[in-house]
Every structure is written in C-alpha cells, then in structure tokens.
Amino acid sequence: MTQIIEHLLILITDYVVGITLLIGFIGGIVKFWQWISIKNSEDKKNKFNTYHQLIKDLVEPENENKDMRRDRQIAIIYELRNYRKYFPVTTRILEDLREVWLHPKNKRLIDEIVLTLNYIRTCRLWRWSIKD
Image 1 (spheres, rainbow, N blue to C red):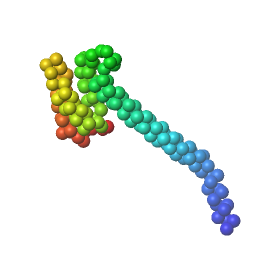
Image 2 (cartoon, rainbow, N blue to C red):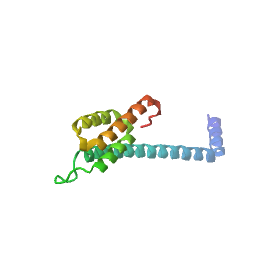
Image 3 (cartoon, rainbow, N blue to C red):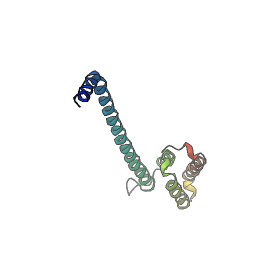
Image 4 (tube, one colour):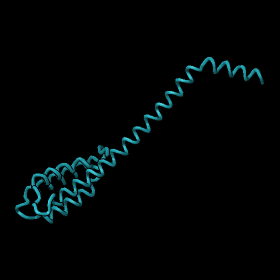
C-alpha cells in the first residue's frame, strides 16, 4: 500500500507543472465559455429591445401633434430586414400596414413594404443561411 502511495507522489511531483497548466487551461476555457454565453444573452436582449422600438417608431408618431415622417418610416421598414428571427411577425405586421396605409400619399411606404416582404420571402427560400 505504501508503495502505491509513493508511486502516486512521484507521479504527481513529476507532472505537477503539466497538471497545473491543464487545470489553468480548463479554468480559462470555462470562463471564456461563460463570457460568450453572457454576451450572447445580452445581444439577444438588445436585438429584442431594438426590434420592438423600431416597430413602435414605425407606427407611432414621436409627438402626438406631428405627422409621421415618411423617410424615417421607410428607413425603419428597410431596417427590419436585419431581424431575421422576427421575419414571421414582421411579415404579418407589414402586410397589415400595407392594407391600412393604402392611400396615394403612402405610395413610397407601400413600395418599401413590398420590397421588404419580397426580401423576407427570398430569405425564407434560403432558410439554411439564416443565422439568427
């Protein structure tokens, strides 16, 4: 029994540097993985908040006394293309808005909605390329 203990002690002392490095490396990998998880979680939360703010800005005027700015709405509609995770709900929202905004003064908005809906449909055909 004492021989086994002696062999273990010799083995540990011979490889103490390697064992220490291995433990440190594993600890570093765990910390890095935790950092990546936290970063991904924060990114998801930021995308969620930004998407909902864009939708709010699209349909609600900044000030109740002012009209909506068409150029700003067009830019928002275009920007919605960057939120692939939300394509199904974006499609429903834009299709509804296309019906609600059906008026000659909204032609540019309707054109941008059609372009964005076409983009979304094209991306659905290439679903495997969606990374969000």
